[in-house]
Length: 107
Image 1 (cartoon, helix red, strand yellow):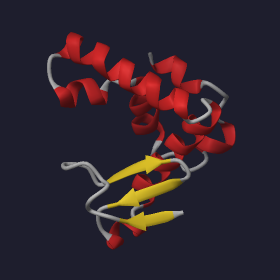
Image 2 (cartoon, one colour):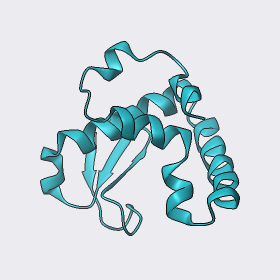
Image 3 (cartoon, helix red, strand yellow):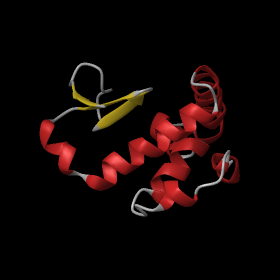
Image 4 (cartoon, one colour):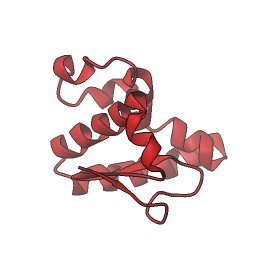
């Protein structure tokens, strides 16, 4: 389910996935198939990690990457979940062939 909310989506981002919802900053972004697919990859990641473990792992990995890369944005871009989503967001068939725990390949 997709909702529009400029208050939930962090500043500087177009969308965020909080299982089972996708939040976008603008209704026109509903037409952005690449962005929607990116967020759907996050939905799958969250499901396979029983939601809570996704957020715990995401936060821990972000902190470790922040120590390594020194900037918030670089840390974000190097989180395994984000690397998987960005690398496969244009492949609309990706979720049909994606293996469980595929984000581990991006650590």
